[in-house]
Image (cartoon, rainbow, N blue to C red; front, side, top):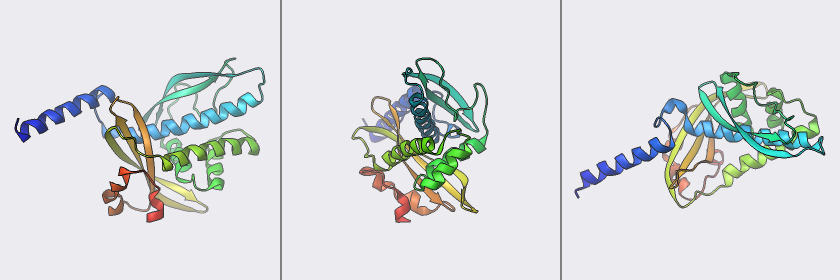
Length: 230
């Protein structure tokens, strides 16, 4: 088999796998990596909300999850929403059923990721989402969210990765009295069994630069925060 034929077969095989696991093929407007990060973020906040709720309900317990889709700006999110045994819990971070939210909602979620290193900014962003909790309860949700965001930064790449997808989301973040332009890149991977997962995220303030485009060799071991190297 000549090299040209081999490359053609390989490309066709890759395309078939992508079509199988990413319905409709790869559409850049779907922003696969960013969607998965938003899903992880919302699910973590909702789990924190359920923990706060159940602390006040000693005769109630968690009871798994149910699926719900959410249209948020240009993102279509598929969420696992935590539920309780009595059917009374509803996460406040989640909009009402069938309600479509705009990009401002997405920007608030992105600010949680970008401001994850600052506990005060993180708390402020959570409050801007309208969560009706006490200071103590908000701190519990915040701590759980920080742990999850830090997990992304410490994760090592698994050995068997079929493909990595990198996507960026441009937004503006309030920093004290200033508004800063930022771009949040996420790295989503698919393994040889078709499982999708977020392996890390990178934040850049200001315009895109060549550093990000040429420095992904660091992915071969782990995904450290690039902010320290800028």
